[in-house]
Image 1: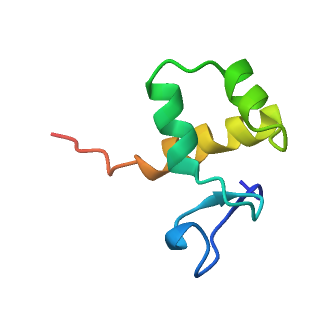
Image 2: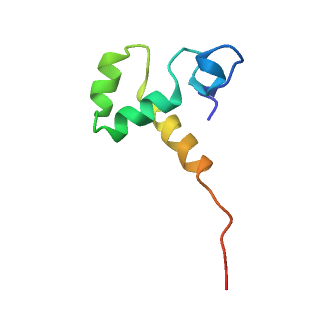
Length: 70
């Protein structure tokens, strides 16, 4: 997750990839719209496959909720 950064004034203060102006949410929305990893990497040549994996891990960890038990 060291690839995900959050800097005030950059990307609206939202999490970005490695200090660039590419927001995690932008990558996740593209993936939700069925844009492939290869297409994303082609559109953003500064990105690496590990950046996309970091976005997915970041999102997965943000959705963790306490487990309810009966």
